[in-house]
Length: 254
Image 1 (cartoon, rainbow, N blue to C red):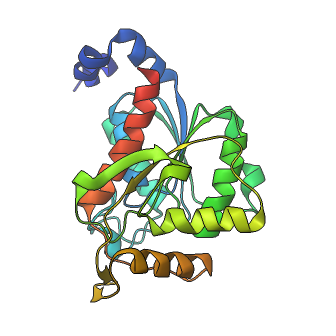
Image 2: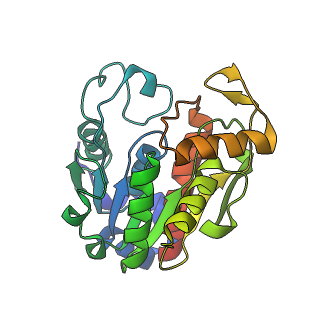
């Protein structure tokens, strides 16, 4: 079968225009974290014509990932997430440049990433400390920067929102990050948009828990203390987070 890059994106070009598609093909984007949010963001970007994508994640595909991650199937369990996702993305567009890096972004590895060499930086990291490190460094870079807040413990995709970081409400992860930045006296150098969801369910880890504001404050305190958070999550919300992050990139180009 003869694959034509022009035909692959013909419907998108009808919507966005030829000039926008040319800019998309030259765009350099890096996505940190390719789980339930980041994997769908990466796929949406490649399906929209982004020609240069770096994906970063240290983890292997687990059985528990199959319910919500783009590359997670029963056949990819045990493989590095970035390798499985790179393979999937190249099946979508064989001409795309996909750089897969199986490592974590953290204080000890931050100098391995030249964020200024990218047009867009996407944060879909789960770890509070690593996320905070990425936010501070990305906000100091010349790249456009977008961040995902917490997508777990959410069921209603119609409550997914976009707001500047300091205006995010109803998100325990956002609250924990703001608390951490204030505590250490180091704030992001520039404003940046976040994808978040205002819904707070009276559930935690599949078991009944606190509801409303108390639940948000409890989870934020736990994350701020560095405790691991394992909560229920569904593709119907996490994918919407990822698609919305991709839309922010596309919207900039358009």
